[in-house]
Length: 164
Image (cartoon, rainbow, N blue to C red):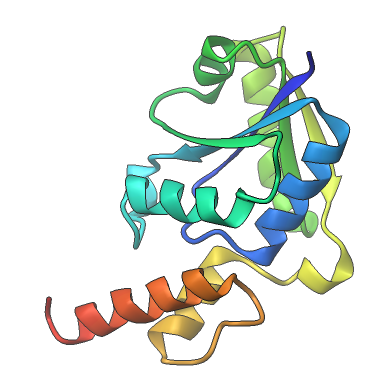
């Protein structure tokens, strides 16, 4: 069985993420969406909230599961008997960062391959940080994320604005 990990912070999961996950699910027998704790990124949503949104976004994909994780990605991949990491690339800046990460992961786990999936043009500009920025300014984000993600963003920022 070919099992892959598609890692990310997914704060929140976007249509661009879902495109990569969907395409990965067509290539592999099983895909685990690994939602990284990423405390250094100071995520808007908690780890469990991000995992829940990812589960809901991928519920229609029968060979995809979602798991939160902390620690090294290569250790998580080994613990799930996955030998492939699938990452999405949008632009040159993504490539530089992901190239570094792929090289580091190779040094940490030569038994684990990194595969890149290029983003289609309609998602090349899309990122979670752009979606968060728009949502924080009370701008609609429905064209970038699933409706339940847009609602979660709206509720999160309403709570922050009211001091809750």
